[in-house]
Amino acid sequence: MATRLQSSLRLVARQTGATLARTPVWNRPVAWATRAAFSTKAPQFFAAPHGKVTYTADKYPYLKRDNTFKKLSEEDVTYFKSILVPSSITQDSEDLETFNVDWLNKYRGQSKLVLKPSSTEQVSKILKYCNDHKLAVVPQGGNTGLVGGGVPVFDEIVVSMSNMNTVRSFDNVSGALVCDAGCILEVLDKYLEERGYLMPLDLGAKGSCHIGGNVSTNAGGLRLLRYGSLHGTVLGLEVVLPDGTILDNLSTLRKDNTGYDLKQLFIGAEGTLGVVTGVSILAPKRPKAINVALLGMDTFDQVQAAFKRSKDELSEILSAFEFWDRAAIKLVKEHLVAGANDPLESLHNFYVLIETSGSNKDHDDEKLNTYLEGLMGDEIVQDGVVAQDTTQILNLWAIREGIPEACSKAGAVYKYDISMPVPVLYQAVEDMKARLVQSDAYGDGKLFTSVIGYGHVGDGNLHLNVAAEKFTNEATALIEPYIFEWTAGHSGSISAEHGLGVSKNNFLHYSKSASMIELMKRFKEMLDPNGIMNPYKYLPDK
Ligand code: FAD
Ligand code: MLT
Ligand code: ZN
Image (cartoon, rainbow, N blue to C red; front, side, top):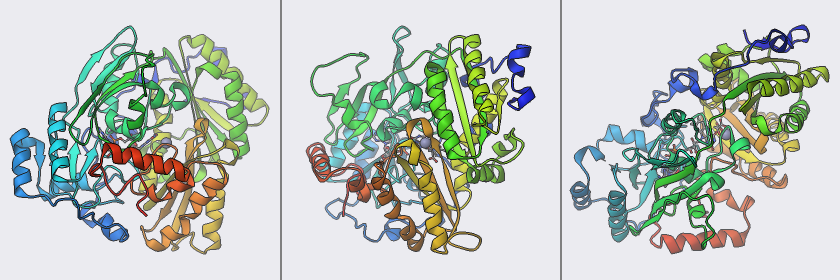
């Protein structure tokens, strides 16, 4: 049993000298609850009724194919066959569905061709040809994106990066890792683990997502609080521009103040400016001591109080501060194996998962215990456990990482990924629920069945998920643009970490001024004058 934090038991770990998770969480076995759900191929584990997903173009009739783009011809395919081996070209209609449909089963494109280059030179030849012939392109990584950015809208050619998956170099002194963009995040982390390092980002989709996809979405994830954003940890990029130019900026330097920092433009560009083919990233040393605690609380004020104290009392060893609500745990219990792992006795309104990572176990244990005792003593926490070994650490993380999948099993899930000042973070969930109740659209047999809140408290990032019977215009109209107005009205961002894709591009003005959007458009026009890179997305089209 994990150590409970109930009055008489809460000091057990310290009094008996029992160890709190001696083995680092990153040594966890591959086959555990959420991990097992992911394959190294494009995700198919939902037994996705791909054929039944409505075409994006039908769902959003305002989207019109840009007819300045050429339609794919046999001649084009013949060219691609001259530069790629046959196994790197997909035209079979069933195989194409995997690349046409997104993880959420919400977006479905109509591409007739997937190309899987194995080298930067091949990417360069593909883009040059597409640019010369005005063929539109969608770069695709692991297809785990949550805003429909990685799948086509119409007949764009998918350039899948899955065959570019080699580590190019690793510097054991600085921790600089240079790799192909198609390397899977988890595979890179395993590679680094063997060398005493770790990837500076971690997310539930790690078993499928590519580092190139992470960079292109500027993914945040579970430990941004500790290791910072990719805008800081990425040291350099290799990018193929739409005209085929290879921009080689695979620097491994930590400091380099020579000219504009061009790589920053491609971090979070969601494939609209070019294809990222190589990534240089700074890996931190792998912590020797990891502790994970799961806490149950009554109110979001208590969550905030615990967070504030964690910054004071755990400070440099704090590596994650995640939260979820009662609706989230109910779905995890209902839909996922991970739900069976909930070690708390009863349901709580709020849950917090705290992770510490450091280099001295005794020091970290002491700090965490003092912190937890304080929370219990001041009745900020109603119940809690501290993991005692790696398995328990994995189980606690499995609950958190299982939430996105559990939500998606609840029906058609509308996902909002917003950042804002922490004090108003949960109000977004409450206000949304109240709105749906008032509209008589919430509950059994109604349009919406659940409103769920979870996310990265440490980063002021809420994941507001609204589960509906199905995706309909009527349902959408009840949530949008309300949620974006709400977010802007609370000084927030309409996309904290998932990006814009095709689901948020027309709401960009809620977070960026007209002059900023105008400058973005000018960058786009300069680098991609034919607009072939990932069209219909990212920048507003209305
Ligand atoms: P894809 O989905 O294939 O593509 C995403 C975007 O990047 C698209 O616009 C695509 O065109 C572009 N792109 C991909 N590769 C390249 C390339 N090489 N060059 C240029 N453009 C490219 N996100 C978070 O930020 N934090 C989380 O904690 C998190 N957790 C998740 C958990 C689950 C279960 C799931 C399903 C998703 C999660 N995500 C999270 C969202 C998603 O995993 C991330 O956005 C991830 O970074 C996408 O990587 P990918 O390789 O799957 O990219
Ligand atoms: C997460 O934090 O779990 C991810 O961003 C995915 C999601 O929001 O569902
Ligand atoms: Zn997230």
